[in-house]
Length: 298
Image (cartoon, rainbow, N blue to C red; front, side, top):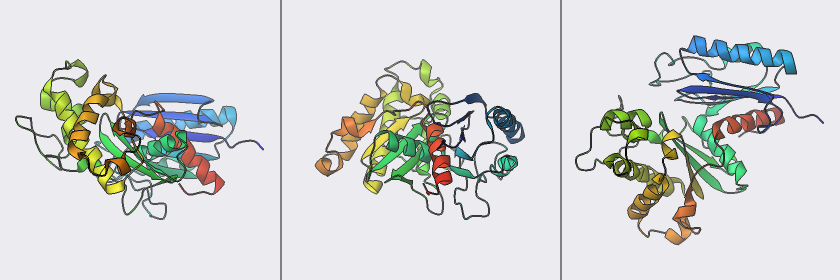
């Protein structure tokens, strides 16, 4: 039996990544382009998918891993619609409506929930749970428990947790919360707060220990609230050499020895780890569509 043809979209605040194929690791077509105004961005999506359909046939389903906040409740009349996003021009935009011409199931989750699903499956973690944190243009947290994303009235918005200031650090940049973690340590926030691009900051620059402190606060909260078996951290900022070591030291200091044997039987260095996929969100989008076609909820 031939596998279904699937279109996967990773919709980031900076870039859109799209693939079409029968498996996530062997795409027949792929494209990447900058996220601009919704109309222009969706026109590029539509053109790519239409051209791929001409060559390979129509997709059986479309999976979307999107930046947010976005309505990801399948039973909601506004399913797939962006909410109060700081991305200019995107609030109120209906993602699913932009793809209606392809007349196939369209399933949407957050980029971090999709990435959590991909990393969960990469580790064959049946019956376990995983948290995925991305730190780049923004900061997001996704959770996968026994193969299913954590949803409620809204998806997790843990990037907006409050974090206490360290002595002498600049103020945050979030327009909603002056001291939320995203507004303190996402890439643009680091550049604005410290007046230097993160990739240009030397290893002894104070922003790195400051970042590790606030990121450790987030990891501690995720650990104590959800007790995942693993926390995976991806995104452009996390590519910095030595950052995981700084984070582990700060996290160990904050968590202390509290339930260490139960929470981290594999050790903290194995509890907080880098991703298996460079494009985990895109892989997760593929899995979302495949599950919907097969009649399974993710």
